[in-house]
Image 1 (cartoon, rainbow over the protein chains, first blue to last red):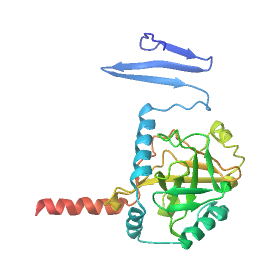
Image 2 (cartoon, rainbow over the protein chains, first blue to last red):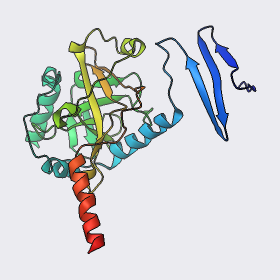
Image 3 (tube, rainbow over the protein chains, first blue to last red):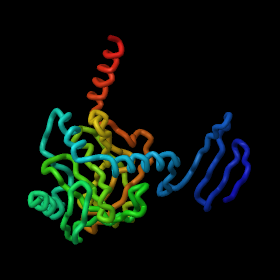
Image 4 (tube, rainbow over the protein chains, first blue to last red):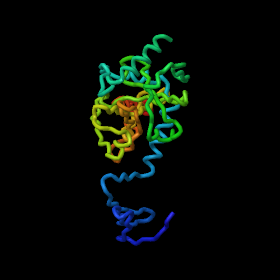
Length: 102
Length: 157
């Protein structure tokens, strides 16, 4: 890991096309400006952690009965007709048949 | 092939319905194969069931069903990972969370949609760069308010 010290207003150039500038420091906060090509994604690390945490909760702890209770709160139930889901007949149908078989 | 799941018991599935995650569902880097289980016909919720770990299944849905105006741009580099050529072969789903016993607090993750190329069945969880989108967007904002209000009423009485 490269560690270096910069003053307010000073920049770093990464890989010829990414510019990082220290805009302001106040207490323990640092305001940073980043100029990068459109195809470079920049994320705050907490976003990843937040999504991970949400994924853990959703993947392990939700039961089919929870979905039923959520659905009972829906006031205007309408047919589920969504973009491209009709392209999944194999998946949906095959599984439905199995569930009916059970 | 046969898989054993904790929610749906044993399922006999064809390999051609398996989605291959080229980028993981965050936190589940060890799982790359999922299928979509339609447990209740016509339900707006489906299950994204892991093929490799039967105990892992994500409830998924589409925001449009709940009246949310939701759109996002898939960056070119991410679209390339799925070899996506157009919207016709794309299926976008959002992972839901329903806290046990508190359905009124159900939420969906709008910031990290799961995108699937239906043609080649490559999939990934996309992380959007958009500060306006929430990881826990409430599905029933009105119900929540009512719940809070009734709690307040109880406190006051």
